[in-house]
Length: 77
Image (cartoon, rainbow, N blue to C red; front, side, top):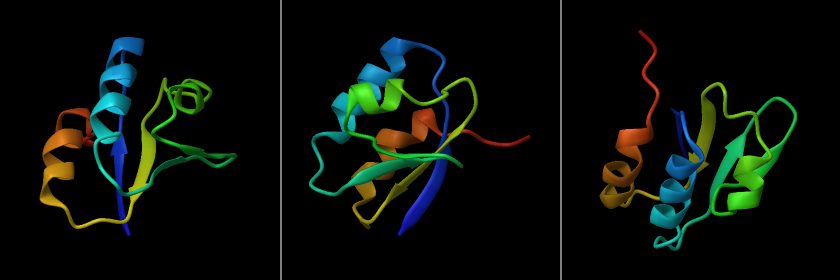
């Protein structure tokens, strides 16, 4: 299981992210203290509080995934 934090600033970024991960066979989930949603679902993602970083979980070692989600990753500074 891989876990990383991602952050979105616009609805367009959410759409782009969801479209990109839908090309992979693996499941992706966003987890918060209160809920878990399918990250491939635009409605599910928009139901979350994306004003702060979201915890993304997925179970795949496909290196292409990292290149897709890399631009959305949140890095604590």
